[in-house]
Amino acid sequence: MLFAITVQISAIQPNILIYAYAISAFSHRFSLQWFTLYQHQQM
Image 1 (cartoon, rainbow, N blue to C red):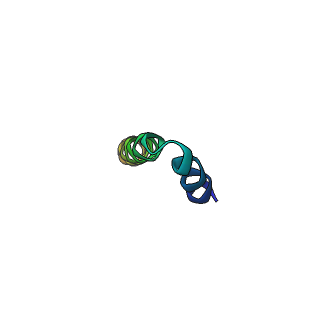
Image 2: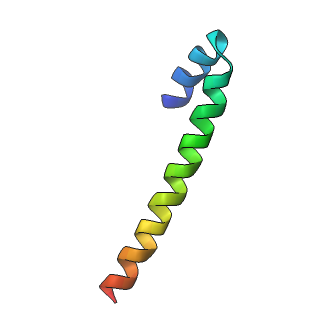
């Protein structure tokens, strides 16, 4: 769903696709770090 919206926008402005990829990669890495931190607190 989100990917389809990004593709539609990228047809108008290709740079948005790069921004969306960077934001998704950053948020994924951040959530992964938060999850490992949360796991360590549970132990």
